[in-house]
Amino acid sequence: MGKYGPYWRHMRKLCTQQLLSNVKINSFQSMRKQELQILVNFLEKAASNRDVVDLSAKLASLSANMACLMVIGKKYNNVDGDFKDMVKETSRMAATPNLAELFPFLRFIDFQGSIHRMKQIAKSCDEFLENVIDEHARQYSSDQSKTSTDMVDTLMEIMQSGEAEFEFDRRHVKAILLDLLVASMDTSSTSIEWILSELFRHPNVMKKLQSELDYVVGQKGIVEEKDLENLDYLNMVIKEGFRLHPVAPLLLPHESIEDCTLDGFHIPKGSRVLVNVWAIGRDPDVWHEPEKFIPERFVESTIDVRGQNFQLLPFGSGRRSCPGLQLGLTIVRLVVAQLVHSFDWEFPNGMMSCDINMTEKFGLVTARALSLMAIPIYRLHNK
Ligand code: HEM
Image (cartoon, rainbow, N blue to C red; front, side, top):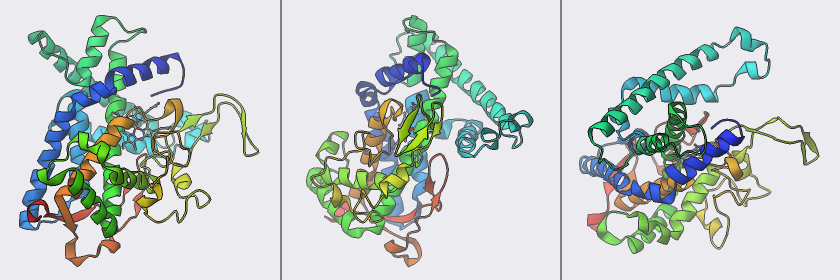
């Protein structure tokens, strides 16, 4: 979301107060329920056929559909293919080391061709978002009574009302839309994949979580968002998953805004600072048996993921921390709870759960290197 300053502060305030507030997030609750139900129906069918499911692909599609419905009002599956490629390419390019940052003279010859490619992508994104805004404007003029639904509607209302405290036109709307889409698409699904992978590898933890779900949710089958606050063990599982697998292992690059000294190191103002939250989460000076997945370590612990406890920072901390934390946490907790409550899981070719490959693929969002493949077994009607 750009460099820290008055512009950034206005944009951040707009995002947190208008787009990612609890009221706004709750207004998308039924959409989340509907999308999750589509996945559960698919998995029930796969269970009756004993089909192997590519959970990574299914979760990516669920999370992208939720993000696109919320931001631009249509499913990712119905968006044109060019846009999907652009989003993937933007994340890939953002994670590719750029030599021109170390050797500024290379910027003029665009040694890696990245500047040229970024300009092409920016142009295509711009065209796509212009179309999205035009479509919304057309719908609005043909149906004045339409109440605000997706985030484009909200942003256009702010733009047209002229009530923004700062200059706010189409350029700003497009910038916010792109940020929200890129930031929300892969983060939730990748977190869910890692947490499920750990649960698959730890059948005792899985059983304990299913017992909690049976007790709190019962046999009604559907986990409601209001159930989440009563699922203490689920919360521990989620924290432990984020500790071992923060999806942005180096957060986003930060910049020091004043000179400071840290552990005897002088860090001049204007330095690029990368915070290795992956290493912090596995630091043996901070965590007992850090490589092991033990949700019980959070029993009677006040450590949380919201940026107050520096040993666990999957969403960053402070003014640049993730503004989508509440939404991201809701989606991750809801989807994990539902998939664990409705199904037991087996693995293809007689593979044992302890053999699930946990290799990481480095990127802006660090995902599993190999897709998570599993066979769902519907468990509720057996009880
Ligand atoms: C489980 C899901 C998510 C995780 C783990 C996550 C994690 C993060 C992290 C680590 C950062 C960088 C913080 C830093 O550098 O200090 C970030 C930034 C950001 N996130 Fe999230 N995020 C998630 C979901 C979302 C969602 C759903 C949205 C919006 C709909 C969102 C919007 C953003 C934005 C706009 C930024 C940039 C903030 C800035 O530049 O100041 N995130 N996120």
